[in-house]
View (cartoon, rainbow, N blue to C red):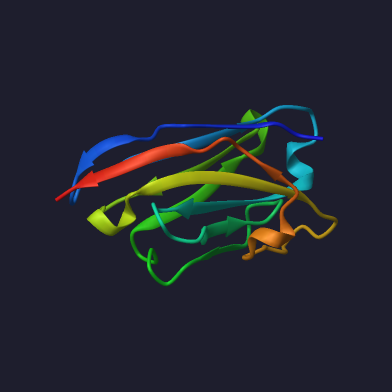
Amino acid sequence: QVQLVESGGGLVQAGGSLRLSCRASGRTFSSYAMGWFRQAPGKEREFVAAISRSGRSTYSADSVKGRFTISRDNAKNTVYLQMNSLKSEDTAVYYCAADQVFSMVVVHTTQYEYDYWGQGTQVTVSS
């Protein structure tokens, strides 16, 4: 089992940047494929980005491609989401998620594939 704690959210102006962090407990972080999702008020939770166990494979939603970058540091048990050129429509609660997998390169893009979730961190982009 793994526990996930997000940080780094806040209020930023449109065009600005934020870096979200998600730190996992336990000694087997490298066994987990990781993902970021977000949920805006009144909307469904949606996929943002995912990264494989090794970090060699990543995938991002079309809405954030070229602006957001997912990465991980297995030595620090942490996955990051670097968000640049933020827009008002990026305003949401951002969640990280983990799924224990065998493959070193698989990424998951649907929330149903993840077993563990953090509590979320609010990102607000003012226009």
